[in-house]
Image (cartoon, rainbow, N blue to C red):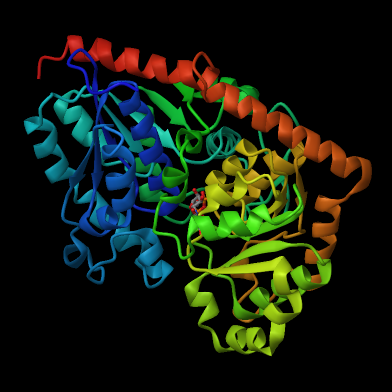
Length: 488
Ligand code: UDP
């Protein structure tokens, strides 16, 4: 493993402060640092505290020089409650705009840092939502790559829908529309895939403009999984598109697999011991990422479906969901006694990578966040897809219709249309999808085989000489060349 080296470039990483964006950026930083680059990662006090185990136990302890650059987050200035430094701590979605405003106010401290830091920065890699970094980059004549968290299939689809105005003239937001410019026929409705900043045109324009001025895009995916979409996206933008994932695979030891994003609510030893006692491929993992909040009645229906499926499971329930009186009451009526030794509930944050990479896990019920899906792909685990919003409906289409390693639970509309107290999916549909995924005859066998093959390809892509490894080499070369000519 390499250390920082004077002839190597200095990357400055600016993630969006949301778990699904920060976690892969930290992984990217670790990979670059392990290859000898200097890496500075911009964060804020509350976020630094969250990833402290990672900072202490992972990167620094391993001698990998990620520098965490901590800027005060201007909550009050932007109209946010104090301490709301991460998307998952916003009191409601109404605070999204102030949150993006607060992040954009980091431009000034970032510019000061870029001017003063040694060694001089060679290249920025910034989350695609952080459009304001393009202005800092222009000011300092610093090349900038965009980091895209979602899959390339989603990025290309959104790009094409936006550029070809595919929804123009379509009155009914639930009417399926063919996504232009894809190698196969994929249909999606405006309600399912409205675009990142729908209804917020100014922000959307800024984000697309910032994409145009970037040197290229770095994506958390791998060539063997999404070659068609990577090529088409590169053609559509005329820029370098570098798939460098699955980034989660940089976490090789148990400690770094467990310490991602937040401290786990359960010890990874306890989870591993529990899984060790289960048959290979028998356990279902149920978790909906960091942002989705499931309504109480829906939580209960998931539980009932798990119970009637008769399968072993690990089920992650968020603290806020569990605190609901309906859920507490239902749980107190004996769910855990009835499911007994075959079930484990994790309340809060689970060591997801530890769980998915255990051989006992044979299926993942996912909200279709891309990090979760890619972590599942990396572990060769097929999925039950349950999209809620944002990129998730298109991610589902990639996994179910293109890669054919997923069974849809049957959600057709985003969760906010279901309304409070509503249930999008009943227990029977949950049970049916579980049986189909975990058994499913020849089709089920095919899904499992394909998932395993993608898992193997993922590992090869990240290994020395693999496609993602070589793309990271290209990124380092690009930044090294720039460092040489850097006259800042
Ligand atoms: N995650 C985790 N434990 C949890 C919930 C989530 O480690 O209990 C991690 C998960 O492994 C993934 C990220 O948080 O890396 C969630 O990102 P994703 O894109 O799947 O969904 P989002 O949270 O952005 O909706």
